[in-house]
Length: 212
Image: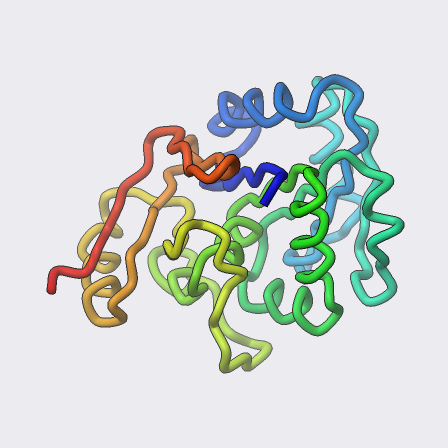
């Protein structure tokens, strides 16, 4: 993977600002950003765009929103410097990304040296398995009925959890043991930067591994 992948714990514009600053510095001023809020199925996308513009406009981003993945092409996406995949329902997002073929577009985009940002659900889909999304307060429900929970697996074999706080610790440790999976749990102001063959942890990040 020649590009860089930013995975955010899902904090708001205040909690997540330090991580957002790192992302903005990586893509540079006046970057063309493709904002993808499709995980938020009940949202008013115009309101999503207002939030995104208010939060990221300070970096001088040139923002365009994509709400229909079905007719998206690699040629279109390559006109942008970065893709930003927002939060919402992780199961619905993974289903949408798979059914549309947008997962292949994302992978090619990264292979060609571009940058992708995933926040909350948008981060979890890049792990090995997405079932952590069904854990903790405000857990996602699998309303779309998918049976394959395999994520895009670009996080070094780790499963990703977002919005982590210490109340989730026992539940995540139990999940890691029962499923034989290793987890990186990102707090709202934490995240990961993946690229150049390494994963940089922007704290706070908690690791859970199977106790065999």
